[in-house]
Image (cartoon, one colour):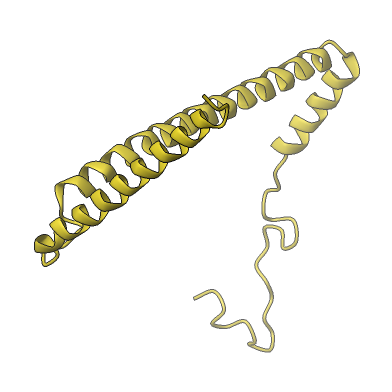
Length: 134
């Protein structure tokens, strides 16, 4: 026997398999011709495929949303913790305490709304302010 003989057999088998597959493909294409009038979107196979594709996509979107919520929560917690630590350190400082008391007194201060006119009524010799208050 020749060394090239197994390669020739292998090539012949591949050629026969390709011929069989091509003829089977052409037969299956002709067999589906009768259902061409029906809408392809409403066929059960397409619907099942769409559902099977959408399930992992929706699961992935859900996981992304959960991870984002967790990241936002951790960021908010760490920000609050950092601000609390800064405030507790500032409260230990006596100068901060004095400034806070002065600021509170400034915020609590209010005018009596009589500073400009006082308690007296306005004098109207020319009659310009006759109907102003009504």
